[in-house]
Image (tube, rainbow, N blue to C red):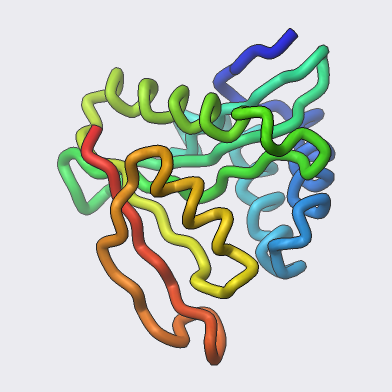
Length: 159
C-alpha cells in the first residue's frame, strides 16, 4: 500500500541517504547537504527549521521524499530543494504523486508558484522531462553554473 506523509523524523534520515545514493545522480557533497537539512529539520521541526518534508511510503518503507521551503524574499513563491525516489521504485508514478502532494501543501499554505532547479547535464535529461511532464516550464538556463558543462536549469509552475 502506498501513502504520502508530511514531516520528517530522525529515523527517516537513513532512508533519505539510501534513496539519494541509489540514484547515482548526486555528488557526495550534495548528499551531505541533504542529510544536514534532514537532521536539522528532524531535530528542530519543520516550523522552526523552515523546511517542509513530504515522503512516500510503500508497504511501510520510505521510498521517496521531497524537501521544500517558502522563499523568504517573496510573498507567494516556494522552492523545491530536493525530490528523489529510490532507484528500485522509479517508473511507478511515485515522483509525480509526491510532487502533487507538495504542490497541494504549498497551495494550502497560500503559495502561488513553485520554483526548482536542476542540473542540465545529459544525466539529468529524464529529470527535466519529469518536470515538464508535470507542468513545469523552463525559466532560465545558467551555463556552467555547477561545473564546466553543467548548467543550472530553473523551472517553475504556477499553482
